[in-house]
Image 1 (cartoon, rainbow, N blue to C red):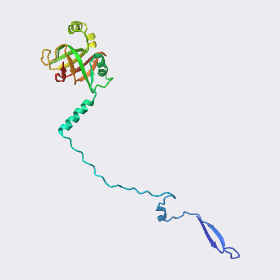
Image 2 (image 1 turned 180 degrees about the horizontal axis):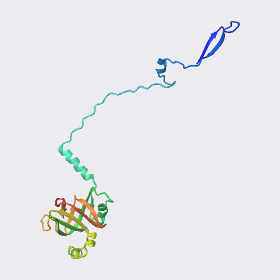
Image 3 (image 1 turned 45 degrees about the horizontal axis):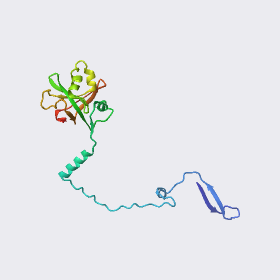
Image 4 (image 1 turned 180 degrees about the vertical axis):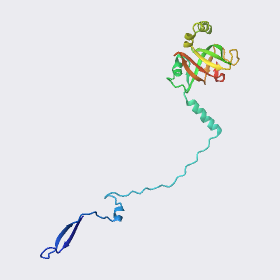
Length: 206
């Protein structure tokens, strides 16, 4: 710290500037140190808070309006209908999303099966737009199925329904164009055999 004072230290008693250098730690007034002075040219800004505006309450929809809104939402979604085995394969392999697709195929025949004590049927489908007559396709696929099972299954699509027999009146007839809206376990076996599991209530046909 440097102290500067005027004193008569000169031999001729003339006022003289005397400088004393004192080593030590300077003391600062705590009140000055604690005070924060903004830089020159900087002004403090005051935030103005506007009046509180109440949020308007939402008007409740009537049941009819809610149903109309629900139907409009469903109609806006694209209905992706698959009508061929080749077109279904990417979804069964998982390379395409299948969260909003329905399946529309032509039924060839229904076969009975058992799994332990459970009975089930398998519906064998071909492309919906297959141009051949039903009997011609049955001669090619059904009559030769036992000796060519894997080859036939790779060209067709199979849907399994549990707790059902092939003579049930609830099943669609051969030759019908069947639409499956809901299903589970859509998969591909042996890289080419497309199949799924569904319920009779999920089927409609024409």
